Amino acid sequence: MYLDFGLGRSFANDAPAFSGDGRYGYDCPRMMLESLDPPQATAPKIKSSVRIPALDGLRGIAILLVLLAHTVFFTSFRHHPVLNRLLSLGSLSFSGVDLFFVLSGFLIGGILLDHLDSPRYFTTFYLRRAYRILPLYVAVVLFCLVVSQLSVRGWTPFGQLDIFVGPVPWWSFAIFGQNLAMAVTGGSGRGGLGVTWSLAIEEQFYLTLPLVLRWVAPRNLICWLAAVIGFAPILRILLAVYWPRGTFAGYVFTPCRADALSMGVLCAVMVRKENVWDYLVANRRWVYAVAGVLGLCLAAITLGGYSVGSAAGPKTLYGLELTVLAFFYGTVVLLAVTGDDKFVRKGLCNPLLMKLGGIAYGTYLFHPLCIGFFLFLATHLIRPTPGAAFIAAQMLGVAATLGLATVSWRRFEKALVGRGYAHQY
Image (cartoon, rainbow, N blue to C red; front, side, top):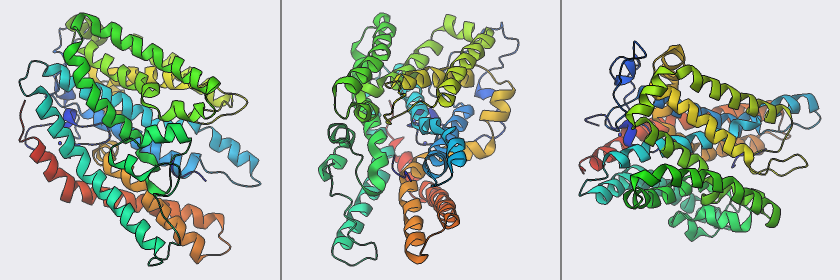
């Protein structure tokens, strides 16, 4: 079974894709923009200071996919080939991380594009990111360090659980370089920190994107982004063919995942061009058509039994499915921000999805630890352990994750994010 793998004025769009601002606006009030009816009317361009509730729903879908991947679809049952085949239909649930990447590119790219001329462009951006990302991440890493050291000394019932022993060096987690170490060693580390490879990619993205947007001429930005989107799958193919652990490296190495991040930034650039915005609003049916074609491609990949993500097998796409996912999620983001039809109002603005999106960051960090803890209890308290005990342990782990993430947001993260917003552009 595979277990690893913003107060005051609205600031949801100045948050990483893993996080939310704690305000949900469940009525999805016309996307908090002027009415888009009739379609031919000129609509205002998106601004990072304008909150878009549907993006909270997308964030909720992303973390829901992650939870499903780590509790349902990446589970394997012995002697149940039919059940395993049904579970394989959810193999693309791992792509919740890809949706996070596209959302990060859109939201963070939009913030930076809106403040390119600010004298505090770099200072404010990095301070806000630090307040949002670092406190909870540091708390989780320190917790894992303490537990691992106590267990090594025999002071816990977990046995020799030294999370920091293995191919991924401990210091890489301190500098957000664990994904690079994972790419070189071909392993994701031990315990609940394996999932942090994607956070490392986002941090490296935060470090580089402000420099790129400040120094690349606006007339060249779209070409630059298109080049990055085109280069990433080529690099993944080269690694898969010529590197012994290249398939896995192509999944966690930052340049190989730059297509999803750059796709989000490209969408942020597009909706800030008035002619493009007007075209997208007036021709949403074509955006739906593109999303439909890409969705069919993803269905074909799933039904065709291809190895996806970091898996390697006789039928592999060498990471090309990641580019298809980037384009698909890019079109979904465009649909979310350019209208308020039934798909947006009833689907993306679903209150439960928006609540889940609001606690996505904590949920992402906590879920491997909580699920792993209850699985440990099941395997050590019930022997032999029936399949029902594993299922119950995973359900309890998810419930504990959501409860802990809610408390973390309300009692810990929210106040820190508010402090970050004391720093103005």
